[in-house]
Amino acid sequence: MEELKPCPFCGGRAEMMMAITPVSIHANSPAVLVRCAGCYAEIHKIINPYTDYTSLERKAKELAEKWNRRCEQ
Image (cartoon, rainbow, N blue to C red; front, side):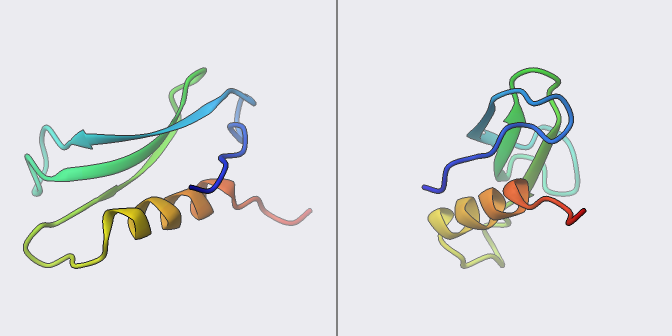
């Protein structure tokens, strides 16, 4: 798995985890998320088991790439 950069907001340690969405149109669907251990900023991808055929590893890789993306200055 790709190494996660520190949080872009507070510089805290980021961690990737799996979760089950509690409430939304996709309630009880699996999700992959990256969350900062310091300020709890997060990004996530909900996996719809009926229409999403991408592997979990691929979703995790895509999410890590998004988390690690920084704007050019």
